Length: 183
Image (cartoon, rainbow, N blue to C red; front, side):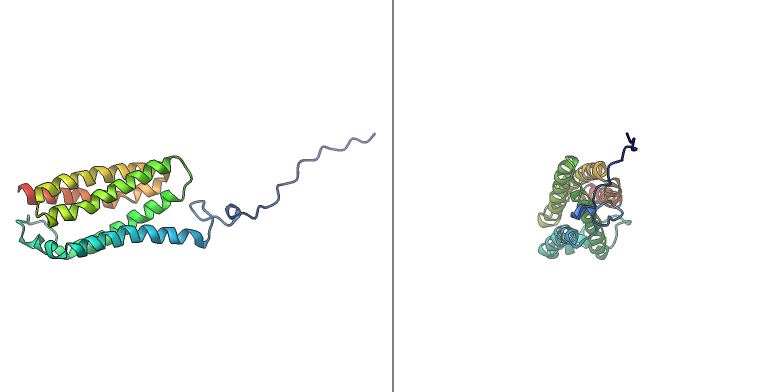
């Protein structure tokens, strides 16, 4: 009678699925399928903001006519700042969208809400020439951006941290809007 040592099960065969491909730093498969999603988020944020800017270009020139505080930035600064902020916002949304978790749904709703409220500010402040109403909207933007950053961080911590420059700028813009409306 031979007593052979029990054999351990053979290691599972390497799967050929996409999930078994080389992984990036985020733990996602490296491959071309994810880049169109990033491009879509960037297009949504950056092009959406640009289209609103173009639609209200005549009214946004009125920025210089407002009673601006001495610390108000020049009008030319807003376009580049928002382009960077919208791009970073899109990267955060893309990072959240790549995670298959129930938390992703709440973060996606928070992203959509803050983006919609953000896009509403220009038509209210400039389109309606209503700085006081714009102040109400920008406070809503600040609250929604905070909610978005919180929900994004619950899904991917770095996605939430990426929203800090956005929160800082919207905080500044809220104070500036308030100074214009009530100063």
